[in-house]
Image 1 (cartoon, rainbow, N blue to C red):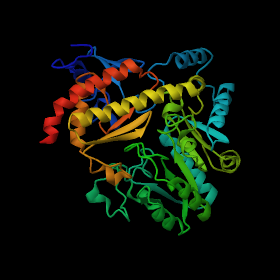
Image 2: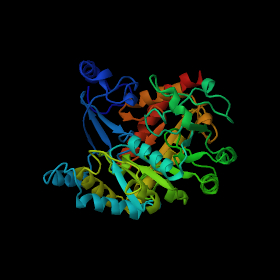
Image 3: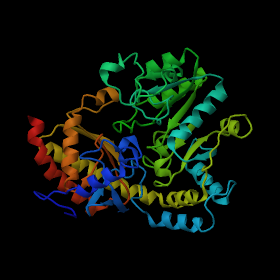
Image 4: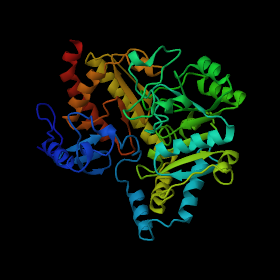
Length: 443
């Protein structure tokens, strides 16, 4: 059964299930990222994407709010980026040298982002986070890094701690215990990491005062979990405390960059970190990431003995795609997309209320979060753990079977391709799905 269905007619994913089973003979688990393996009803296999839609091997046409885990800020398969990529591929794929196109991409990034005086490109968010840590340690001569519960900064051993810890393992809120995110993770990797609760400025200042912290890393808005804004004064206070105690402030803008604004979370909130990392929406899903910072700090990777390398860094075709994407991210883009995103967010809030489902719906125009069971805005990861996760998974499943795909962790990513017709269709589908699950949530 293909196409979008409503009411009693539901999508089926039989061919996807079979394809995963066949693929698992060659790819571990049938997926190439851990974060795809547990999706309900099972991982899906897609044939192509276009605008706000994905098309799967069952022939289903699905409205997509995963947006490539937040990368597709323009929607799927934007023509300008594809054309730029194809034109550059015809000139060459990888030079093991420099190209003019990477300098143009860097110029656009420096003009858009307050903290970007100099740039180094990479391929993934995880790797440029590691580069930022190395620069911070090289600059300060210190080794310890502060990160916050619920914030995700990549899958490497030294930072995959307390990204989604169970409360019974996480210890007291005022002194969190580092909780590993994976089997096989080196336990000693936590020794240079300090875990704190986010939005607790007094706790952050007290820890920085010990004088042994190389850097504080955070999402400027907590979008890996919850689309939570910083408390008034928190980012400003963190900036001041880092300066006072000789630590660097690193913003992980892998999700927030080019989604909260053209200048990222730092532009939206008016706080400039020492270093920032970007990926995802920087090139709408092409494999581009970036470490940016001040001239002084970035000179460490040029002449200061801090090594940063990578065969695929600044791959010309990906750079060409990035330029095309950045040129599409105009004021008109953000104004129009934001108006639609806010309309969608308000519609979701109203429908859940009308159907008797208690929920907090909040965040930003192009990324918001739905948490069932909450009636107040969450301030940190621990607040989010009180949400009804299983109830939300049931709602997400009901939506998927009706042709709307949302992340089971509660995030909704909105793109320029989510036009009024798509939003109307989404809200109509949500009302039907909410009516289905509301009785079991009340029970």
